[in-house]
Image (tube, rainbow, N blue to C red; front, side, top):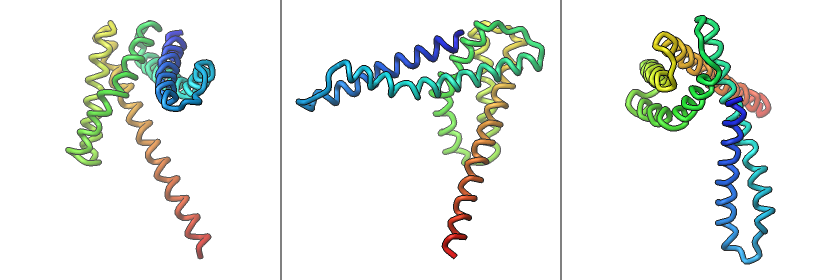
Length: 176
């Protein structure tokens, strides 16, 4: 239920942001659209953003539940929801900066990935403690979620790389 409310909140914030942006842009046009059309347009443009963020929240919540099930941990659904929202905020803010910093310092080496994994485990552990999870619960959930994110990112990069390779190979055959 928390995921639905969080997605609805994201949709409302995105709608208001897009509305403000369009409204500001329309002020320069003397024949601008009315506020009703702008509201409908911004609400429709915000739907894909909210759907994507809701999907990410759902995947993170599922990952946390799987880790809890694997290690037989007791986690309430309310704490899972708050934990997942806090992790999502961390991933789209601080984690991006940490990842950029590590790439600039360490490059794309394996040690950079391991340091990023360690920082994620530490950050998720701290988030878990702030949310109110017990010490014995927060560490396995943090480690499991960080490893799952690393695996998903690695698989996504491999899939993206294999897609690029197969596309260029097909173009070479057509040119011959």
